Image (cartoon, rainbow, N blue to C red; front, side, top):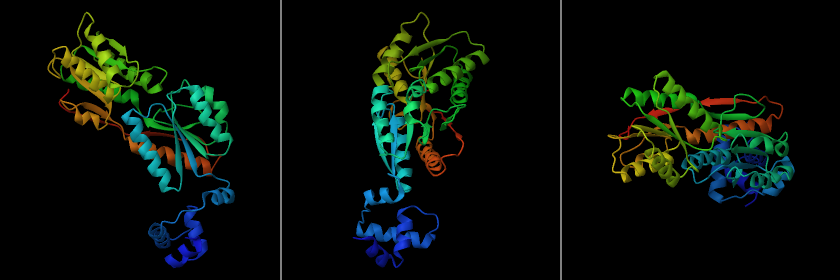
Length: 326
């Protein structure tokens, strides 16, 4: 099926079809709908190579994800992919594990013009090593909010969210609140720990116990909780920086012959589907994960279209969901 046949099928000009394929804003909504319907009906596949030569764009976005096994990351990527496809782009996904060598290999796609821009979900401490390779290419940091710099970013206020969790636990009568955190090379980990400690300080609580999970996994959550239970003073509440870690903590609590929330209340973070699957259901901070991904794409496309535009920082809303675990 050629572009000429699509035009005849939709009852529009070839130029109109071309503008739709190139995401031009000059096409009337009614004509755009007719062209898209004709494309869907005929299973039309545009010549991507010809399109790239004509527009000097690949219509590909590189997405560096720290850990695709993390349910939160997976949801963000869904948002990225959906918004990218809506705008005529495809994504190339690299599960970097915040490994510089792996990220460096993927970033060669920028210099080769295989991708038009990059969205990263890596630890901020790793990014300076990659900045030289990224250069002036369009770049958005996703789910790790930067206070300053030349990189556009989108995230939530992790400090406020963590502090709110501690306030909720204190209001419920908890006095010995522990934290299960992750790698402090991630900014979100540092910010959530700051919110945790600020919350304790405001409540004038002396108990302070932080255990660092080796990775964002269920088993790592179990191991971290087991270490907390081996302490001289047992916590009566645990705040974990991800739902996956919190779910692991709940298993460790049960394995120790204790109950959630009667003996130890548990709160997670991210608002993933896992929070509703565990028993008892998990209280958590819900992030707008797919909206974060969609917003990241919008910021990136703006930078692609306007290379000299200043960096934009978008702070999105979060919500505390109270369930039976706390």
